[in-house]
Amino acid sequence: MKTKIFCDIAEINQIRKFNKINLVKGFTTNPSLIRKAGAKNYKKYCKKILKICNKKPISFEVFADNPKLMIDQGVKINKWGKNVYVKVPVINSKKKFTGKVIRELNSSNIKLNITAVYTAKQTAKILKVINKKTKVIISIFAGRAADTGKDPVPEFIESIRIAKSFKNVQIL
View 1: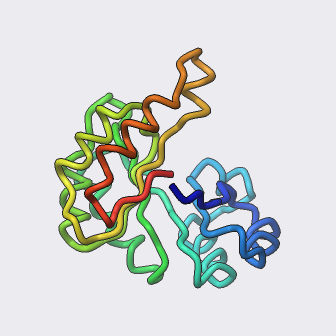
View 2: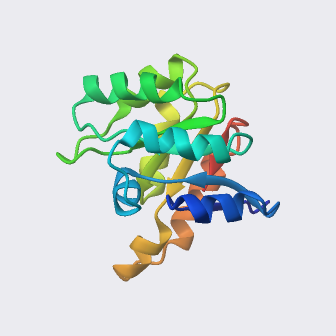
């Protein structure tokens, strides 16, 4: 298994610094990190990041909670650049699986980073709604799972095992 290093950051100077390092293979961020970095306008700030990071994959997250709005935002975010992955949480704030959002964006050939995944069961649900050609990253929140006292390693191993037949899927 190959390990890839992605930076989970939004600070422009850090992105500039880490983008120059070949060991770093991509970036991921979220609306909270972008706000914390001082952004007043989400789209404008993301476009600033894209001027620096235009070759490596970068994930920008939808911030809507309603499936239709999530899809609309995902379509718009996707248009920002060829290296953009649309980041979608696996469940919304109402604890509902976002499978409809994932399926619709993925079937439109939009690269996805499905985030806040904690279990192999969630990975399996994701794999049931995606195609086998459009790139998908499944971001497992191992650190947060470990913070609750649960060993995340078995979930990682099982997620990797069940995703093996999907050449377009990476486990992050």
